[in-house]
Length: 397
Image 1 (cartoon, rainbow, N blue to C red):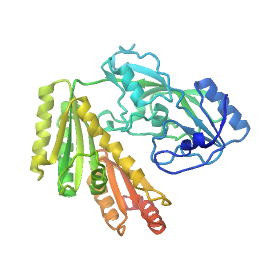
Image 2 (cartoon, rainbow, N blue to C red):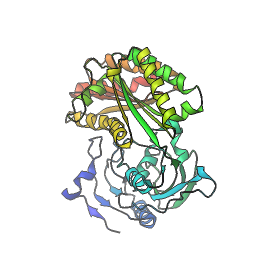
Image 3 (cartoon, rainbow, N blue to C red):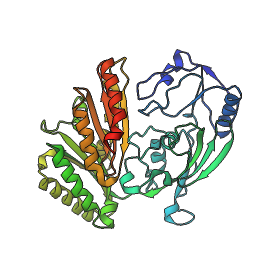
Image 4 (cartoon, rainbow, N blue to C red):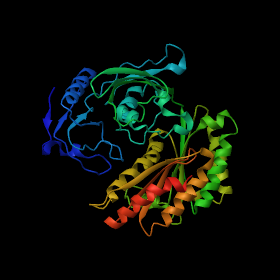
């Protein structure tokens, strides 16, 4: 195995999209499970601290080293032959990949098959090993449920270099962040990609109108299997998130009165029925005080992909907005789905009481899985932001 000193050539590997910066003595790039096992066995014998990295797209600093050795899995990027028919029926279509393969790599490999991987992160360059380690819900969790069920089999190497395998379903390794090793190979369950897609962003002049719409959207979704299957996501952006988007020159203009927004994505094989769902959503929007001009709508993959990119754009803009010397304060909150209005109101109330600290709340609204980010401008603000994030779980009980 080749170990490289962390010279200026490798300095970019000392940070991820959290913009936090760490330190390390060595970096190595294994190419398969055998090399990964050898590296971890040696590091265990030498009692070296290990930090695993994929594409470093995380926003919470999980790939930032704190001394020791960096094990970067980006060269473990092979994609093996997909099982397009499923040996046990259409619900068992699968593909096996190395941990360093990215979501974009998998999507490209499946492009002509009519299949896709349902755990759809907002960043195509995220690696499958990173998705598994982070426990990411993915953009389509509303439609497909808990994401770990789509990792059918995982070849795992623990920190002592010992291999093991875990099968589909809840696992102590899922979302473990590399605390007990890393995935080397993953077998992914696939789904059939519907033929038609619509993406719509609805802008609201108040959070009250938005939550009324979201409640009615949730009720609509419960009306039958077609409604539940058509709606793939409902992503929330608060006023702080919209201000960040507005600061980006590539974001199209939207109403100056907008105080919040929801992005919805509808997919299905029957275009007429999908348009019926689209019109039903628009009616709900108008009934909740929205204006038709305050919407963006696209159909087709290329147009919709730009809307999906807004979610990741928020995380990039939050990262770039961090003042040098100030630590980004960010936390994820996940509560009962039927309590999303109460959680959102509590988060907004607390954010309004920060005394002027800029922040943003965004995420999977109907699943009540929200992300809160605070962007202090000085050390005192950073301390206040961290204290606020610590007390929020108590506020949300």
